[in-house]
Structures are given as C-alpha cells and as structure tokens.
Length: 206
Ligand SMILES: C[S@@+](CC[C@H](N)C(=O)[O-])C[C@H]1O[C@@H](n2cnc3c(N)ncnc32)[C@H](O)[C@@H]1O
Image (cartoon, rainbow, N blue to C red; front, side, top):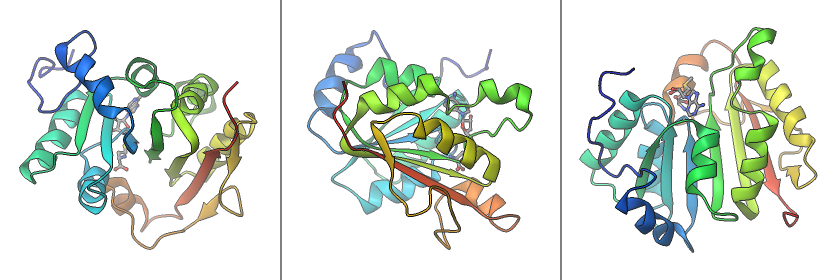
C-alpha cells in the first residue's frame, strides 16, 4: 500500500463523496479532455493554459503522481482541471457518462514489452469499449508512444471497432511533432522515433 494513500489532494474527485454529485453536473455540456496516465502533469500544465475554456481531467494510478500533478497545477493558479486516482478503465466507467468527453490523450503508456505481459497493457478491448462509450461523436483518442510495436498493437485493437476510424493518413505516424509537452517525450525522443496514433468516434454508439 502506498504510504500517502490518505493524503488530501486538491481537486480530486472520488466516488461516493459530495464532490461526485457536483462533478457530474460540472462536466456535462463542457469540452472535457482526459489525460490518461498523466504522470507528473506536464501535459496538463501546458494544455490547461492553452485551452482555458476546456476542462481537463488527469487520471493516474500512482497516488503520489496524482498529488504532484494537482499540486503543480494549483500552484500555477489553474482552475479548469480535476484529478482522479485509480486505474484508467475503472475511472472511465465510474466517472464519465456516455458521450461526455471530447478528447482522451494516452501519452507514453507503460509498454509491458514481453508478450506474456501484454494482457497488462492499458489499451485493451475492454478499455476501448469504455473509450467509445464516453467519447462524443467526433471525439478523439490520441495515443503516443516511443515503442513502435505498441503503437501497431494499439492500432490493431482500435481498428477492430467500427465506431472508430483513424484520423491520420497513415495509421501510425512517426515524429509528427518536434516538441511534445510530456516528461517521457523529453526522455525518449532523443533515443528513438515517437509514434502517434489518433482515432475518432465517427458513428453513433449502438
Ligand atoms: C511512462 S509514464 C508516462 C507519464 C506521462 N503521460 C508522460 O508522458 O510523461 C506512464 C504513466 O501511466 C500510469 N499508469 C500506468 N498504468 C495505469 C493505469 N492502469 N491507469 C492509469 N494510469 C496508469 C503510470 O503510473 C505512469 O505515471
């Protein structure tokens, strides 16, 4: 168990709490952008300033990192964000009504390189079903990784769902940007090409 599990975190949303009810009212009708596995919050620091009208939600399985993300955002005076501590698939199921999200960003998810560990990958069919459910029509899921094999694997999983279609001309595009605001981009981009995948929910959910 993590030592700081009970630490108070600003703008954290938890199930079965007064903030939960207010949360649902708060996100409905807004441009909601999710950063899945937000790490230390660099992506959110840049995007909350760049898009002040949007509402950003950082989801992270490490409580220490959730605390750090929230602290860094609040120190900068950002108000257009919330954080959720927990597994990404559970968070989508628990906190997001159908068709409530405009964008989901999955930046440098843990790759679980060995084939026998692929079952631990965040991007799996049950996760994608939640992605499709929560995305608005026209909403997009962005997937960025330094592991080309994971980008190809993710595209294959996403392509299995007819409600989604690839946005970029090639399903996996390498080195789309020369700068990208995450810690892992900084670490990995000098070492190998970065792979970008983007899918859009283009038809109504059944
Ligand atoms: C390689 S780091 C990338 C962090 C950040 N997105 C970046 O690009 O710098 C992967 C992050 O995903 C988080 N993570 C791993 N599995 C997760 C899950 N099932 N749900 C939510 N977050 C998860 C990890 O704790 C870690 O912070």
